Image (cartoon, rainbow, N blue to C red; front, side, top):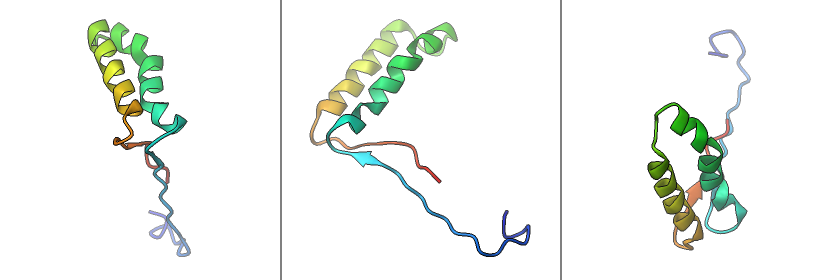
Length: 74
């Protein structure tokens, strides 16, 4: 899009943090915890489904064999 607009010196750098240990692995369960009320309020997930997902995400975060990544940043 930028090149079509005449801007030729464009660069692209993609960063995707991934964690095998440490606080970075807690981003998924923390995010789920923070949005759980909204998910239930909109009927996207039951409280039971949210709790099950939180349990699974916390297990994944505690597992030293699991890699958890964050969204790509452009």
